[in-house]
Image (cartoon, rainbow, N blue to C red):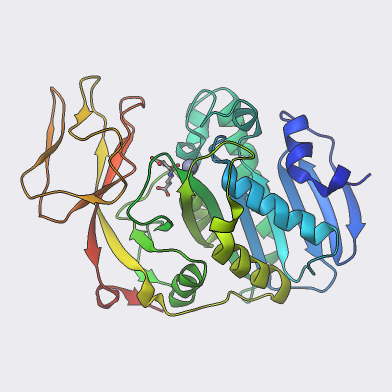
Amino acid sequence: MTIPNNDFLALTLAHQEAIEPFSFSFLTGTAFVEDTGILRLEPNTPSDVNLVLSVGVHGNETGPIELVNQLVSQLLTGKLTLKVRLLVLIGNPVAANQAKRFCEVNLNRLFVGVWQQYEGYEASRAERLEQAISDFFAPIADKPEGLKLHYDLHTAIRGSEYEKFAVYPYVENAVYHRAQLEFLAASGIDAVLFSHQATTTFSYYSHKVHGAHSFTIELGKVHAFGENDLSRFADINTSLTTLLTRGYCPRVSASTMTLFKVLDSLIKDDDSYRLNLANDVKNFTQFDEGFVLAESIKSQYLVEKTGDALVFPNTQLPIGQRAGLMVRPITQGDLTLN
Ligand SMILES: O=C(O)CCC(=O)N[C@@H](CCC(=O)O)C(=O)O
Ligand SMILES: [Zn+2]
């Protein structure tokens, strides 16, 4: 058995809950469909590069799903030669079939074991996705030369002053990886946010638990299946193609990217919680010092310094969840890079 038409996305959507595992050979490797939306490709020639590409952790963020599905198809048909170990994860196939961000709970808040506190589809899917990554990295546990990479590709709910941006998950020693920043620059990323605290996102999970170089990467605005202009992903398509077929991360100077440190997470603390901004305000909109950006009967958030900006504003979520990230521009000189 193979993947019909080399279309892993179609197979996944047609078997959204489960699929019997199967494997087959293709020109430059072996493919293992391990579960629905979980595909491992092993190259014929051994590689120290172990790459996880996850997409559709939010079901309605279809652009990256189409992009990665196209790359997988090109590998399976022999148009591209596989030179790295690759794990492709379509995060939330059930929500994707319903064109929804999630069914019951936001999957991207359930990692690092938080799924244990929940029941239902997303909780079991978070457990399955963590297991898939653990299994994928297991063979290189004792190999210091093994490079672990995880790029979790998303699209954002609203427009953005920086169309493409990455979230660098919290790094305890605050030493950041120059080569990975340069890879992000080569991938057409316009801005990077450096997280200030541990979270329960997928990218934080693979960094914290597996020591991977891991990022949430936002590639533009959400569109429905079939309505994405894949030419807008040309830079990351090229950089991922180089990584897959040559086995290294292409790099250009990181100086093209605007860098931000995350100052605060805004937390929805009550049903009365609201953000004082128009619905169509873009990510990275800046505010003046003292502006009351968020308020509820329990709290008020005043902008600390003129120029501080807001990313991911959203109040359509349960109490206790993140309603936005406050960020402030920094320079490369503010960072320790290795
Ligand atoms: O546009 C939005 O408001 C959300 C887009 C999105 O899904 N972003 C991720 C970021 C994850 C991270 O902080 O690393 C999310 O909210 O899960
Ligand atoms: Zn998302």
